[in-house]
Image 1 (cartoon, rainbow, N blue to C red):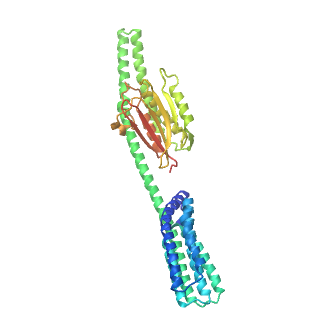
Image 2: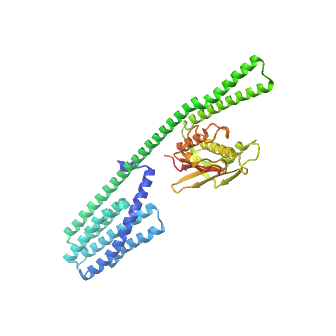
Image 3: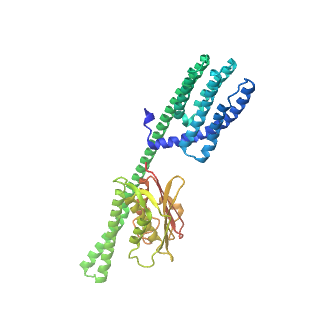
Length: 440
């Protein structure tokens, strides 16, 4: 039953793996068969005085050469398996042809009949051992070839039915063995693939639980530290303002200063709360993956981040920005935070530059990166990046809540990708986000 339960993704992987094994086995089998056919042709010619078999042996030789040559012109998995099936079928056809020549011919000797019977039986014993991914093809081609031989033998005057029955008996068991091997191999592969997927799912759930625990700790930290600080500051200035008002010592300049500090503290509290809410909402609605064009999105976010910016704007360059499979809304949050950080941390250098690009990895992932030549960071703190409220620069140097990279990391995790960074103090930083082509 599991033979028909293999999903398309599993079947594609199964074929690729089987084709690799089949290619190795087939190469050895082709070389071995070509040499054996030539050697046995000479032995049969002089030992058994067997003539007229050359056309059939040529078929076997062609099968071996077709496999060796054909797979270098087209390396697809299915084609490799098909070539292997053609080669092994040619060996069966070769032996059937020689068997018909001896059994149906008037000059066949008992020694020749025994030799060809032993040869046919050997081929049918060996083929299930080396069939690999070609088993299902060989089940049907073997039945057709043996049925064809039977039709021709029935119409002949042969009397060696004992030898012929032996050949058919071994052929029958060979076909049954190959059919069962194919079924068992597919069931085994399906079980392994499903087990691997479950293990990957458990690993992802464990990682998500770890991230959830880290976020919970960060929320507690935010409430007890990041929110407590501006709240205490706002409270202090409010109390000081109250005393000054009651004592009548408050002039207009002091009033504006106090209100400015209080509003700033409230604004910081509001920003922390909004960032916390955004972080908690990320991914709650599930992923809606689609093909996203990176350059228009990056350009739109850049114009938004640099609009109205005082002073010199950073220079912007794009490098190989194409398309990516991702949730467009979540990707917008990711790029927005990375570009915002790049603009912010490169704002204090003489010639600020930001580069946004992407490239393909060998493992089948698209890597999106944002690079700047700003403040950078010490690589010994690289493990802290992406953790909520983990800041490598003080709020006096650069404003912010420390949640931006946490949002980036969470978006990447939801896409089952990877997030990492490289940098050096005073030499800028590069942030990388790898997205797989398919999300399991």
